[in-house]
Image (cartoon, rainbow, N blue to C red):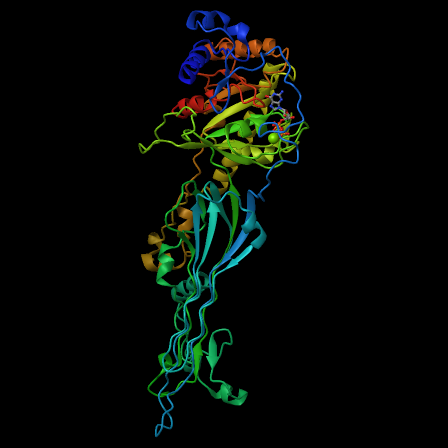
Length: 563
Ligand SMILES: Nc1nc2c(ncn2[C@@H]2O[C@H](COP(=O)(O)OP(=O)(O)OP(=O)(O)O)[C@@H](O)[C@H]2O)c(=O)[nH]1
Ligand SMILES: [Mg+2]
């Protein structure tokens, strides 16, 4: 019985986009030929076919709340943030140690101070379970552990603890600022090496005491310190892990679950113990170097939910009720505008072995899809693209949805007008995004100017090269751009909700007629854009509050995912 009904429903729905349960008059002829059984059909969300009130009957107003018609206080609210700025600081290195061997009969033993441990690394990983950036937004500074100092008896310091930043899948990471003391030092040294050699006195050759670099034997008096000669400072060092570090500036689009973390900032190197400074004339050096300071990277994190279906609609259209009807989510539902203040993500289970018809769909790598994600965002109002209402801030979550569903309240006036209004806001948002992308591209463009050749003056190449500034290799490479499909080229369909209310049928029919026109090209695409997707566009009438008509949506979404 259930199978027959579903088949018939599909035939009705996909053949002429008619629904026997909501608007029986529209489907009467096709039903008459396909079924001999009398009585209206009701297909509920859980696929049990029952008899219920017909469309002209009012929904009996009951005081009982249910999953689909909950009381306004029946919802779950999880903390949510989709943007934050964090500073990741790699661990500083531990200091080297000044120590000497002390044993019986060995009065003045050789130096045996260990090296400092290197600092901890900062990693990032996009994981499936995370849904929000609120935890990171609260922390702001994320610091890896400092390496421990070296100790006597040649004992090296322990490494600093690593930190792992876990973010939801769909997070975009952009570097804002970077402070890398070792890279700065290396650049400085590079420049100095290319300067014409100065006449240095022997006194200058040996480095002087630099408090930020040297650590001296405890108990040393200032006069002794002044008399001390310090060896030349060892060159700046980077940990071998720094080679795996993300290139500057960091620009990541973490749109897949990551099995292994990605290194953002490698920990700094520890200082050198006093055995490193033994010289022929100084067998007992009383100095060690301090550990390096860790690098700091400030980044902007932005979450753009990666849902398969994004719901776009005016406030109070019934988006959250539809999310509840399709999923187990407990999005807030209320009969006023802006009930939803933050995006809700629900998981639509395609086959939960409870009688819901299995929707067959294989993913890119051949595995059977068991579920898909649906993003319910706050309602859009007119001029949302000018940052009115809450729309603009949340449109980024539908921007990356594979399929868009325009949810339109059939009982709230002209549905075609509402659809055009929604499309206008969405396409304005898209224009805004492309303008921003162009500005970004311009900012990142590198103007190529060939190096001036001085060969006519008889200069040799290395000398001519020596006069140039150090090349900034990072700026020479084109940075990867975030690939995103234009919103207007995404497949979409319209969900006409509240079809259980009286006098919605004419509105639905007008909407259906308009969409036929769009599909055939008689009407312009509601976004007024050329090449916008319109091939299989259709409207689905539903009553989310009763869970009627919603069962066709999963199959529709799965079909459109291939587009
Ligand atoms: N009769 C009827 N009422 C519905 C239906 N769907 C939703 N409603 C009612 O419409 C009102 C608004 O529903 P919501 O789901 O909160 O609407 P929304 O689009 O999420 O609203 P915002 O979050 O404010 O944008 C609630 O009172 C629902 O009970 C439906 O199919 N039929
Ligand atoms: Mg809502």
